[in-house]
Length: 359
Image 1 (cartoon, rainbow, N blue to C red):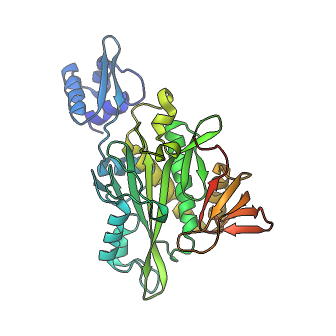
Image 2: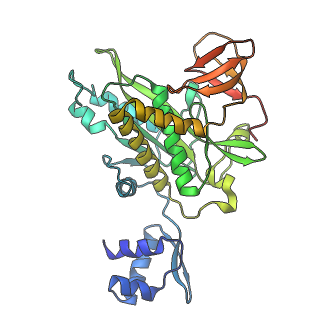
Image 3: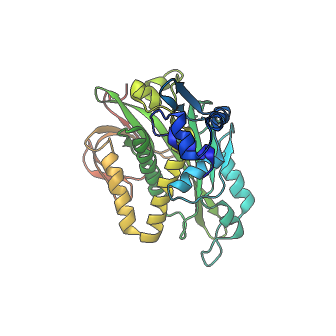
């Protein structure tokens, strides 16, 4: 560990640390400590200095850094390829699609990864801004600079993608766990891909959306890889028009109670570590791991017991109808009891909540 890394570790515990103690622990002079502090400030760390108290990090650097994301993920026991990081991009999912098109097939006939598959499987593409962010049903996903963090993971399961909803559900669990771990929140999941936080009086706002897209192999007729796109609203900021009624940011909702100094890199790294851990377990341990993941998903669900309006998926025929949510299946289907009678398991489409749950 370098001197800067040691000093960074000492200051990163939320308490003031004296320059004298740093010098003793690192075996350097006070002047060398000051030099290291200034170097860290130049690297983007916000460091408070108070006489007779010492130094403390008040805010971590907020630039998107592939190296920092990889370092944090590694510290969490997660190994990933070098992260592709951008300050701005059209869409991380679109970039992932471009990379997949260039790579060709992901899997050989025996199920092993091709050379292209080896390069892209578990690849993470991250950006601090998107100029053409997309949500489900082709909607725009507002992706302003210095506000949120936007990233996509390329994942190629051994036996192909057989249930995209399970991959999305795992992503929702991973995001919820990451935000709960970092901020001490109690995230809730709205089937199938939205993460919400309570803003008060039983009302919620969306802080994260997930878009899962498939990469098909037309020769084998399989979906051999998935792109899991995640957008998280982090910093305080305004959302345009009616969007402001349903969307918010983590730190805006938490207000003064929000943990200070959280870097967007840490949010990405923790989410990726959680998600890959879930995917690895599901791939290696099969149905038991999938069931355990879905139990976590159900515990976080905000829909069970609520009355909703069910809307058909884009491109599908059918009318909207009212229903009561009675559960979520182990295959990530929403189980509803329609107002006109009968139980249905929904594997696509959308639901809107018939209440004042959104502020």
